[in-house]
Image (cartoon, rainbow, N blue to C red; front, side):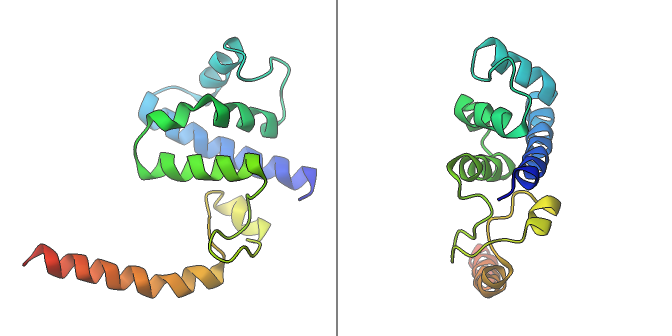
Length: 133
């Protein structure tokens, strides 16, 4: 992945992180980053989104939040840091960068999303029928 695209994707992930922090900690992303710099989890001179995301990932900050949005963000950060970001979790194919720029938390390619959709629909239908039994 080109450095320019990686930084653009990093910016998108930082925006997602900002939304989660605002919603659950009522804290702007900039304050969280400043705090992580003070605790030496992010280098004081780091300005690239990639470096900031590494600090956010290793800080464990998003493990304190227990909901789907934070879980998706944790997984995306882990893939970004480990090098698996942009690869489908099911088949390993590349997810188009344009898609990731629109939805940075995507985990599956279009083929796998389409193939998995009927399974999710069947599961939801089963859940609905068992709720009334």
